[in-house]
Length: 378
Image 1 (cartoon, helix red, strand yellow):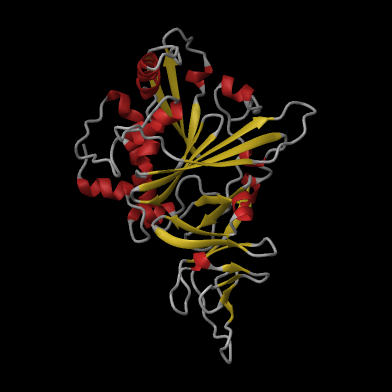
Image 2 (image 1 turned 90 degrees about the vertical axis):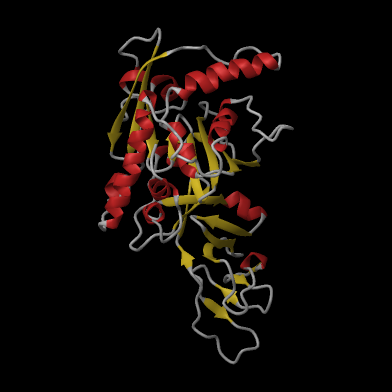
């Protein structure tokens, strides 16, 4: 167990908190162009800040402050224009940099500005960076960039802190129990076959690398040279699990996480490209108010949400199987300390040569073949 103060240092997301300052050194996805084409003005909450995301009539995207500088009405009611976003109340208009460029009825347009943050598009997602300048590069991981992939993107708002989701990703042994044993129990109660084999873990281990941590496991019946054990799959620091798809855990605030499941499948040779598919889903609760968990991702949600809005780590007792969780917590604390010293935290990319044409990271064999990855990638 840890102290309440240390738990806060791990989990808080606000701009003036240690972890919040560290998180602001990274780019986060907040929406998609497809969503903005349907609804061009959207309220966004990220790292405890309320903001307004909009697309003007030219297709340019901006992320600016929540409220108009005039009378503080929400800019989420704004009207997209060719040159920006017009406030619904008195018509003041803001460009994508947050500058007021039109003040109807006034003799002059005053040099006013609301906060704004840089926005980039990658892989169909709209990304933003809330940290100090100069901004690092948006890391071009291959699943967002490579040709000949069809992509689906799902969004789900979770009522829990983002670290709970990431702790789960650093805990290989939960797979044996939450997914295999609990999945079998759930399916038997609902008249379904067992979802997977009940293989036992023999060994787990973790390797820190430039962009995060590889987690490895050896299951009963596997050979020591299997790539589940020799390679494994990565957690990309601070907030992404890569298991053939990207599971992106976006810290909305201290008690909410936007979970983005970004899937990419290699297109069959000669097949026509499919447009990106985007969905917005809700956590499934049953009549007792607990997560209904028939599928693996829903079982994970049960593990995350079942700890409460912020897990009380003063009550937990970490054991041998939690070595990855302990490693991950230590990495958060180490990278908080780096930012406090004025250094870049883990995985921040500033060298364009590292980012082009993309960053390719390999995973264990079955997923690597299925998703068309380079067998030599590490």
